[in-house]
Length: 410
Image (cartoon, rainbow, N blue to C red; front, side):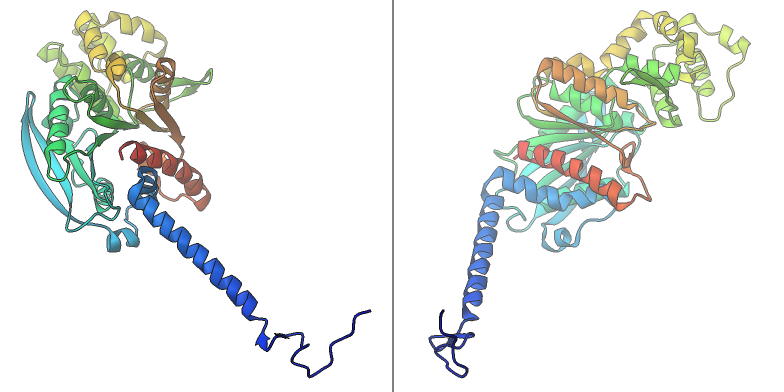
């Protein structure tokens, strides 16, 4: 049996060893851990500065709060780039293009060597003063990206036209010509009605090899299937049909998009009869319309859900061609950039089935893409009154796709 140490002996005292406190050993371990942590932070900072995946992660972490709230995180405001917001207009084949540019100014960006650009097409209406768009654009810019928001008179009038393809191309080319963009890559982010324009532009031979990525949030893929969903007021998901009741705005936009080739009198009657809170057209008013105009009215009004196929066939050839021309599906094989698809599962502006069809087509073509469905959005804006669990679940998916998107553009 070993001898027990005698009390009072420093040599054998259980809390001392060779005249030194043995608590120094845990202190050494703590110092070692601290050195390891500092080393990891140093390596992490190097990765964030040098490697594209590191830059994309840091960017995603600071941009995510701006996507799901109406504010930017304090760390981004205090440590991010100072930004300069300017407005300008450029010319295109369809008329003026209005640009809002958010330019990082000053020294190096928050993320070293991370200059790049993003063109944002926010959809129909005049969204230039919408707080959530301004917040998002500023957040991107504070991380070192040069951000350009664009719109056109057609979009501001709640309409979508293939003629605005050139406007989108010209905006992208202007973005790439800005100071600090030499040798950098630019992507495009589109919301709702902006999705078809970004697809048309990304397929255009003038820029299709330059587009780093497309992010399509809450858009549509095929104008004909969208019209079918409006006509039946229903969608089919996983083999099950469920009711779908669109809000007024998409009906107004589709009316503007699809009635332009009818006579002036028919356009006037259709737009009056399909306006928000308008009374249904009378039998006499309907009889005064051509069969094609009657069919379009019933499709947009949704008052003949059992006659959708028949009414689609009654549309005149020029309207059928217009529907094809307005569909991103038309150009999908000409797009070379990776595509990131996002959609609200319960979207009552544009049905989620449109983006599911987009995803299926890209999968069949083996086109590089990702698709995520969310439950925290109301079309393209975050719903109010969400709990932490709801935000955390969709927030993780949003972070993942944002990280992949930004990595692609690095």
